Image: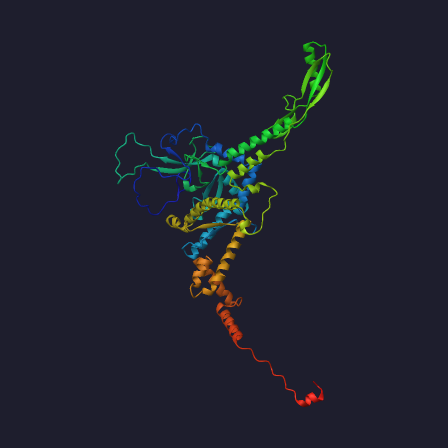
Length: 535
């Protein structure tokens, strides 16, 4: 079980010998390649790395972006759509209806999945975990097990700061001379070993000094976004860096312009009489210091403070005037015009939202949802829902990795069996947006309307199974489960069986087809009754 600082899950039977290849295996998690040798090895030349930002700087930039109000609102919208739920339900549940295994194995898988959610404290911290994954673009957890009894499974999950850990691939040191390779004996590329490097002080640049940890001891879930050279894992916020910087500059310049142009500035003409030049300048400075207001704008905090050590943007004009002029005079310059235009700010705000795949309509605070037919839903909302679905699919790799480790350690399945199981394991996230609800209702209404039209042809041109499978879109498991539920309800007397209902309808139809009974005949009146005058 022990490999490096951690553990590894080994296969019981060796894999079949694969054919040789002249290219390295594609790494979808942006692992850094290194060549064996030296202290821990040296990194392979990745091009012009001096002008690139490293992962630590990128993560710091992403976290700084999340503090901006507009970016924070967009991230909150995405996280709220992806992670939903109430106090009674889990935010995510496992779906095993398509898994071809016994019911006992399914129950074990559901039990281990519940344990994983408990280790993550997912019911309470689901929002924070998903938001952290979305901002940083990656998640690292240390899977702690009991070395004396690994069959207990994972005992604790500890979060690891992504700035302190990274995954590397170490290749064998190439030979000095290239010798002909027999493809039947050796591979064309050197063998590689994957592991994680952890440094408590943080990793800077291409440093690779730290603790080597086995890959199976670390749970790694990334965003799936790579840079052009596939050297780094990027966050979904990466494409919004330019838009956010532009918005910040526009807002800061707008504030500065309005502070400098909005007020009406004054021109003071100070009568200095016949004073010499130096005396006149000194007198002018004394008058300025007496009446001048020093206001300074701080672009970092957005504060305005009175500080006489700095030149003010709201500087008035002080001009000396010699004897013979009109004496001391104060005139006013008008303030700037068109200060209420915000079209440029709104443009960059919408650009920021578009870069984050969030509908622009959500930017308006007074915009309300239209609870109606799905035809009223905008295309942006549909695209946004598909984007959230992709995020959920990628985030589910976290559960796959933890569930694999838990099941293998506890003997639920082997690694070979897990490779077959994971293809049929799905995770259902609770959706509480009105789009999903309206869409499901309208789809069901359309299916029922089509079923009602085709019902007279059931048994004549179409079978009942065909209608259930192709019109109602019921799977084999759903049909089996529904049949069992309907049989139980008929046995309990909650509903009438279709056969009895059909017989009752037939009997009612036969009764309706019988001719109506003639009305009772009225008694005939005799001539005596007429004579008596009774009628």
